[in-house]
Image (cartoon, rainbow, N blue to C red; front, side, top):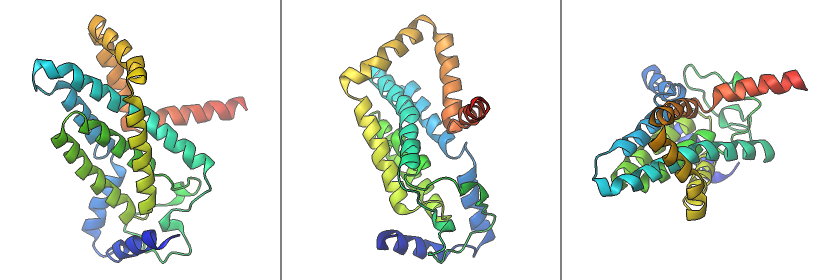
Length: 232
């Protein structure tokens, strides 16, 4: 625990459990996938289809593909860090922190997962950084929403501010890595080839992929976990 995290957490926590309506809204943005990653998937596809001129179409779509690829890789990197780094209790579970739970918050399913870095923040800021390369205006909208969603998670005691910052660094790093020309061509060329030759297959695959991103790959994690438990 550091003074930076403590001061922000305790300041926000004084408003917790004061208004059932406010806490209800906070829980809606915490729990609803459509209000979290769903909004970001909508932004990515807005960028893909935005009518900003034929000369910009290829570049826009390359950046949209980068956003999707980074949205797959960055949360995996964050999950790996969660596993290998020392365990960090979430603020709401930290006995050394006088934290007042908000209305409705359930913490039973948080016991086994370390809070650093925030996987949700990683996803939000990954797509935000990628969208800045599409449009500064769209990037600013994505940034404002990412900051709001991060506020929700800190307010509810699910993450420390430094967990959010860690997610920002991971997300930005993955996007910048995927923008290297040599790496970028590894996924841009095959994607555009499939898009041109088999557009139906391309959009059907992207639909399923974006559904999984929206769910933070919950289905894959669930069935993979069952498979590992069954085999070993």
